[in-house]
Structures are given as structure tokens and as C-alpha cells.
Image (cartoon, rainbow over all chains, first blue to last red; front, side, top):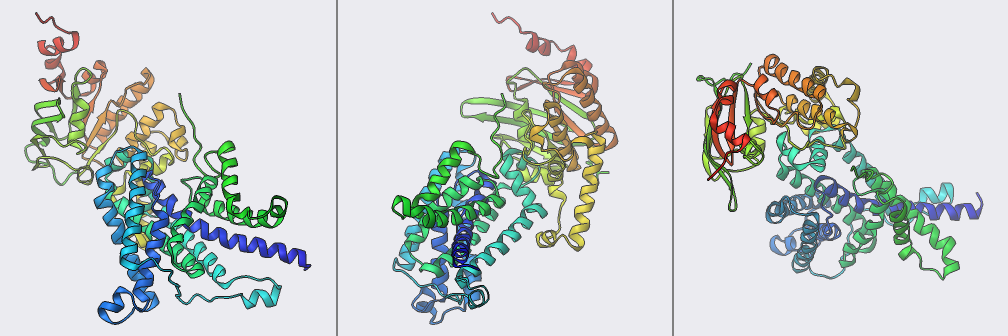
Length: 311
Length: 263
């Protein structure tokens, strides 16, 4: 293969990997939006919180270490963090959502805005605000296999992220379409009252979606945290998820994936091939431009439900 | 059919129910009963509190006073999921379907409270869960046949015409194999032909499945034809209760419907 082609492939691959990471974050949004019509502004902070909790369970100097004098192995720390996220979901339902049933979407949105700050503050108080290197044993550096066989440079971490993302999405897809709870979730998304009338408990469903979103946030937090350390800026990746959602549609799981990939690859390609003409650094705003174009021509996104007004 | 048939033949009884929203009294001290196996109509002018009454029975509204006895069990209020799991199903005045889902999926959600198998087995679609899913699917198909909606089983219900949506909604309620079926204006906005179909379905459900039915309806012809007993509400109060013939001759009912001069 020629150098040009390999260079192009490397850009595309690194775009795909970044896209998977965006998709992971967007997925958390989609789940909650689907089931409750709430745009959860706190999703990014949930990633941060999950990563902080995970770090604390396994790192020396954390709460566990200071109080009991030992730290947990990685797998146990992950299980415990999942537990923490389920408890957080339960608390959110108990303390916030339950009191806002039947309120306007904008009110629920404002509630999640508040939630974002509360969660961030609690995380800050509990775990401190310094940058923490998260190492759960994901191999770092370039993949020798890809380099030796194809001469392409691929980060191992990004490969792991891509595979994890794919597995997670498959599991969620099966969960949504095959199980009674999945069907109940889609029912709640469509019509609260009707869902209640067939015996679906809104509160249970809400705790379930927020828990699942919390777990997705944990996975995203692990990947981003391993890449660039656990720090406050982790919660800002939520902003990158916005254009992904606009592209993919707020209610579509496959949409979140495809949207993430388009944004990831698009911004890398744009940076390399368009960047030089406009002075570079367009990676930072290219995603938002793309989202804007979509809003003008296809506001429901690629996979979202068509917006039809019946008169 | 129903192992919990109450001995005195009364399936549901509401005692002295009062419901207010702030200062607005929707229902004032209303009592009546629904006997096992009958078709019970609730009628009255607009704003009489009929829909509120259904909402009290299936637990959407919680009355400030009174109690509800269902299958011999008395409580001061119902909860929606409790009502559903104890065999109360309903339809809505303004259709409340899952618009993005197909007819079949909508009807399958009606089986929600009857599905018991473990979520993980369901996800794997394996073993007992697979058999269970198939069993429920079979029942849903049975209902689709019964309501003659085979042609639309895969169509997202949001695309269906109004009359068909009403029918799917009835199907979803029937899928729960209810002991008590609450129908809120099942024939509203339908043409004569659709009304006749719906009447036939209501009567068939009552006979074939031995389901007790409480329905709200404005079409007096329909009400008098199909119901066994009628309760009449006006401004939140009960003004008459009896067979269609008794109610038709009641002076209070005539006044409520035709208006009466107040000096």
C-alpha cells in the first residue's frame, strides 16, 4: 500500500475510534431520553462521577484505602462502581424525578441541570479535583499486530474501546428488543398513562434506565479516563455528544452509534484535508457545524422518528 | 373462569367516593356496584365526573373520601399497577396507544403483568422464556383474529385511522385477560358502521370471555341496547341507577339531559 493510502486509513481508523467514544456518551443520553423524554444534562457528569468512584475503590489514598487499609482489585472495583451508579439512579428517582411526574420537559431538563452541579460538587468533595491517572490494565501504546502486518498505527486503547462499545451496544439492543422490560421501556417512552394502565410501574422503569445509563457512563468514563486521566474536563465530553445526537436522532440507539462514527471520522478528515485551507484547528468546531447543517435539513436526525404534525 | 368470583356476585363496589381538584368537586359522595358478568354503563352530561370515576377505579386518581371494594378487598384508593395486576384493564377517551410500536407489540404490552420469566432468559430467547414468549404471542394472535385486525398487525399504530386505533386499544386491554374492563367512550367519533362493529365486539367480549364491562358512552341508543344496568351522574353526583328502562323514565335524568328551569 502506498503511503498516502495508509495515512488516509490511519486517519479514518483514529476517527472511528474517537467516534465510538462519542457514541458511548451519546448512548447514555438516548437511553434516558427514550424512556422518559428527559434530556439529561447530567450525563457527562455521570461519566466523571463513575470514573472518580472507580478510581477511588482501587487507588491507594482513596476512601477505601484510608478507612480499611486495602484497595480492591480492578474487577471488584468495577462491580462496586456499578453498584454505586445504581444507588445514584435510585436516589435521583427518589429525590428528584418522582416529584416531577407530569411536568413539562423543560422543567425536567432544568432539574437535570441542577443535578449535574450537585453530582459534580459531591464528586469534588468526596474525591478531590486533582487529575487522577486511571489504569485498569488496558494495554497502552501502538498495536504491534496492526503495525507489523499492515503498517498501520493503531492505539491499543482505542481498539479496546471500539470492541467494548460494540459489545455494549449489542447487549443493549438485545435487552431493548427481546425482553419484557425492553418492551415496557419503549411503552413508557411512547405514553406514560397507557403504560401505567397495562401495569408498568414508571418508577421501576426510571430506576432501570438511569442505572443502565449510569453503567454506560461508567464504560465511557473508563475509556476516556484511561486515555486522558480522570479530571473535570471529562464531564465536558457531554458537549461533544450533542452533535452526535442531532445527527443520529435523540431516540435511536443505532443512530447514536452511526452519528458518533460520522462525527469522529468527519472531524479527523476535515482537520487533515480541509484544515490547511482555513488555518487549522477545525476539529474543535467541525462537529457543531455538521449538526447545524442537519438541523436545517433533517431536524429529526438520521434515525429519529419523523416529526409529523397531524392537523 | 375466574377463581376469585365474589360470592354475592358483586365484582366491584365504590362507597361514598368524593374527589376534588383544589376547589373543584369532580365527584361527590357517589356509590354504586358492578356485578360480575354484567355490562354496566356510566352516563351523564359532559363534566359529570364519569371519566374521573374510571380513573378512581383504576387508580389514576386518589379520592379524598370513600372506599373501593374489588374482589372482596376494600381499600381507600387503588394504584394503577395494582389494579392492572389484579385484572382491571382499560381504554381511554383520547386514545393512548404506543404510537411508535406495531399493532402486535401494542397488544403484547397488554400481557405485561402476565409475563413472569427472568429477564436474562428473555434476552437469550432461550428455554422457558422462549416458550413463554411464544405462548403470549399465540394469545395476542388470538385477539388479533377476534378483532379482525390481521391486516394491520405489523403497522405502527400511529399511522392507523382513528377507528382502527380504537380497536387496537381495545385489543391491548383484552390481552391482559381482564376480569373488569373499563371502556371510556369506546364509540366516540365513530361512524355508524364502526359503532356497530364496536358494539358487536363489546357484546362478544362480555359473552365469550365472560368479562365484566363498565363503559362510558354518550350514544344513548347504544347504551340502552347493550347495557344491563345504568348509573347516571350529573355534576359529580349520582342521580339515578337501574335498568335502562328505569333510567329512561327517571325525571331527574330527563331534567339533567334536557335541562330544567330554575326559578
